[in-house]
Length: 261
Figure 1 (cartoon, helix red, strand yellow):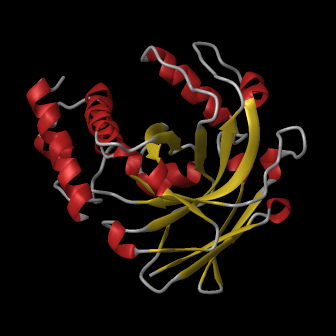
Figure 2: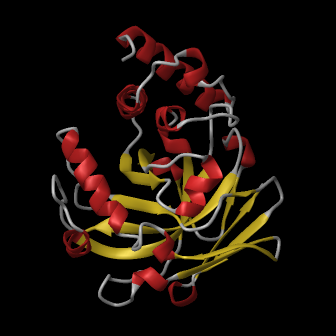
């Protein structure tokens, strides 16, 4: 376990990297004894400082929920981070590259909760009952820690590498569509780069919502009504640069697009 002073120092490093869009050396290279609990403590300090500064928390992201993402990162368990209101874009948005240290895109479904959800034994069925609707989303990954050699401790500390998200405008209740078979065909500048289906996320994309409710219970918390839960990618991350146009076709759930400027 890290000393509280080390946790505060790392959180300050990450806040500065967020402000300057920079990258810091791996935490695990400098603090090899750091644990997953330490990493959530670092994330918590950073989160609370942002809330104190006036940012509004609107939801949570779940990461590393598919084999595709676990193989892409070498990390074998899910993680989570927080999402603030100023990181949410509508489909068709122009997004400044300079807001980020680096930019990769993932294909996901997001869920908006109608009622609170809590563990310790939350099931997929209970999660589906708590969900108001699903909406297609692109997640913009943004790492403030050097990518080479990262572990889950580094990633969690860095708010699970969350940068922003782009939400579509098609909403579906869980009983209106079999969410497992929602497709994602991801294109960059008109060329298809990645494809997948939502079942790639833990067998059902809402399984991650139940997982998160149970994880939160360990910290004495719950998911609240109205929160957006970004459920994890069912494709590998795709790098993008300034000038790139991105479009993802979700079949019956429409398309989501953005352009990086």
